[in-house]
Length: 143
Image 1: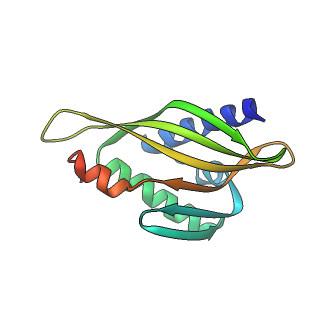
Image 2 (image 1 turned 30 degrees about the vertical axis):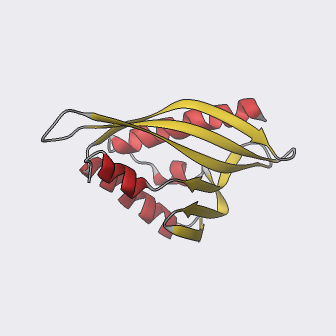
């Protein structure tokens, strides 16, 4: 399972960066997620469905990232913690690169912990836990 999860996140990274460049295929992006999911951060816990609303929210998110100067997202490391033969937590260490209009470019490191399920072949994200993105962006002068 670990090798397929690593390949999955390489694809995830590629789709994210293509979307940052304006080449967004929301059908491809949505295919990375399970039919339902849960997300948790200091802002709270939310649940959602992999539907047209998710695609719309994701497209708006990529536009927001572009507007704040996000140039690229790169994976620094992936650590996979198996739970059973179908589930794991993928601890993904990311580096985000931002262009700023009034100063030097900024690099921010952060981690996201993804809940991954592998049924019928391909892994899919069914949840994630992340830190306080807004606070991190403010701390580095991005927003």
